[in-house]
Image (cartoon, rainbow, N blue to C red; front, side, top):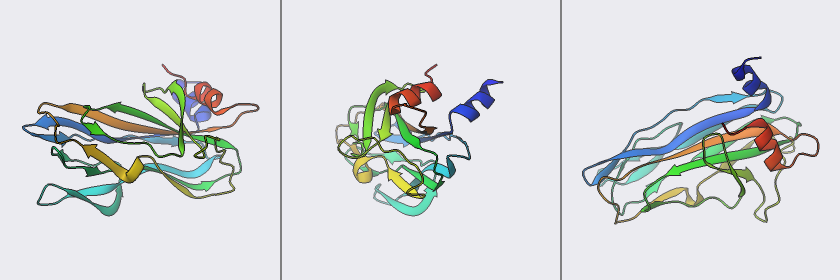
Length: 204
């Protein structure tokens, strides 16, 4: 069994989205987007996506969200001007097979660009295949949620307030990236969320 087939059988769901990738141009920062792909196992969910709303630049340099869902955005970031950013995982047709939902967040940002994580993501204290911190979908009190078909359709946000905060001290020459990778894995017998992830999505 080749590696790709093994991943398709074991991993269940994988989709990656680069929310911000940029390189400095003068006092501004220009985003260079990255596209990802999706693989999922049909007995877990009918449709699984990671998207964000298209951001449209205004004449004053600010951005508004258009309503159209995309897998990438291109920005020119300016010091002191925050950016709306709403990456979200959408699940349609969840089956009765119990599964955990994860997101791996891979930041490489200047200290002057910050963001928060929504309270329904619980840090697992492990790294994912792309070297980022892994979070599992959970209640705010930390109890991990097992998706079992009780709710078939669900949209789950990632960034708190759907905003990247850009300091007015953003230096020239700054570069950085912020990428997200979403996963879903079946809950094996007596498997907690951490064990299910490390079993199905081993770090290279």
